[in-house]
Amino acid sequence: MNSLNRSVTTAALRDDLADVVGRVLYGHERVGVTRHGKLAAVMIGVEDLELLEALEDARDAAEFRAARSADTGERVTLEELRDELSE
Image (tube, rainbow, N blue to C red; front, side, top):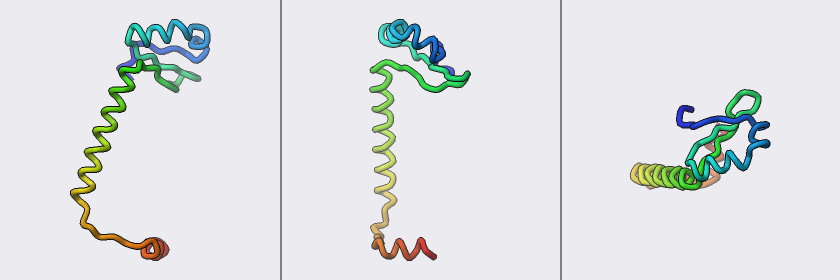
């Protein structure tokens, strides 16, 4: 993940939590947290989270519009679906 500014181990995070949170909050850094040598989590600022959520909302809306335009109006009952799945 090349958009990380730095990474810390979970042990280092326990020791330096205030510093890491400060870097994320005030330095707008993205900090990876590793566990057993593998990236386990990422700490990001609120602005980055809000941007990510806005992107997800936009993608969801686009997928909904695409599904709605592809909808033929055909519907099946639950019983018909069960019968089809049991075949």
